Length: 236
Image 1 (tube, rainbow, N blue to C red):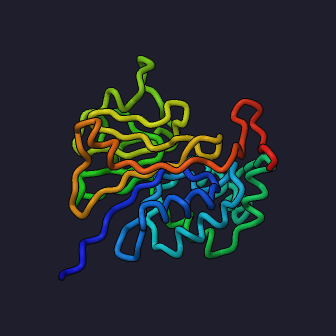
Image 2 (cartoon, rainbow, N blue to C red):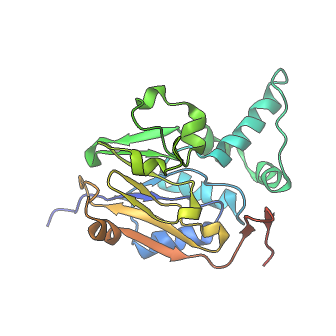
């Protein structure tokens, strides 16, 4: 019997929640034939950013850059190039910087602001985009930070594909199921869940809401790691 073609697994914001990431991969029975894609914010706020990067490296994952990933990369670049203005980090991000090795940094340094998966007719970005503007002309700050458009609506409500866009960044809204966009940030680091969209080889993202939800696998956070109101880490 021929081997089944590998799946594509797109994971929302991990934020250093390494144990939950491993539990999620175990839940979906991730194996070497599968492809892992991160929608950004692998690091910071959670307990084990380095462990997450090690999983990314071990699996050969495709990494889309998130705003927290970009923040510590900017700090590293400023430290290397003294002509750049210094980047001030809070205690949490500073501890991440001090924990990473060169191979860990390489995972972040080779990340992209977006990645296209043409066999699924999918584009993965961290935060989102402004509808109607080609991806090459999008402001990088938009790709890293956008949540809403000018009228206050969620950008995914206004976006009409193709391609279908998978993103993270907006934990307040939890899962976002729009006709042409799927938001996977379910706030694991805040005590919510870690979520992934699992697509079979060559499969398109279902337009039907119920069918799309069947493709999403989530695991609960072990606890609250970070309080978004006080902006402080929460101890065990």
